[in-house]
Length: 92
Image (tube, rainbow, N blue to C red; front, side):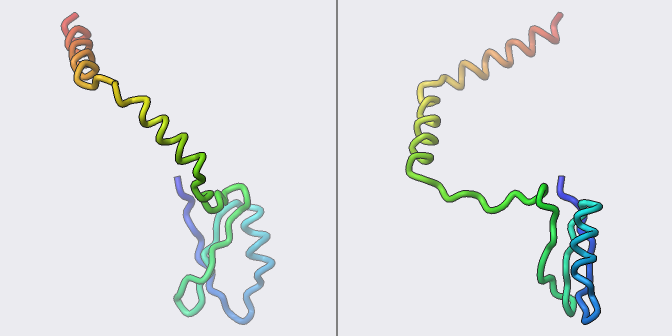
């Protein structure tokens, strides 16, 4: 679940060190705004996931191989078995 942001207006006398300390202590992200425009978000390092890595050729090949493992799977039979099991469970 995403954490609620606390809004902070950036002004001439805003103490950024105090904002950083507050995020460190309460783990609540701060949305820094200037003149009503969001300019940055300060988050605790534990909550920062960072950018997703770029796909690699090896990773793409593994994903395609995994997807191909399902090519002979009979989904119609699986659905029939699920409905039969549900019916039998409700009949007893």
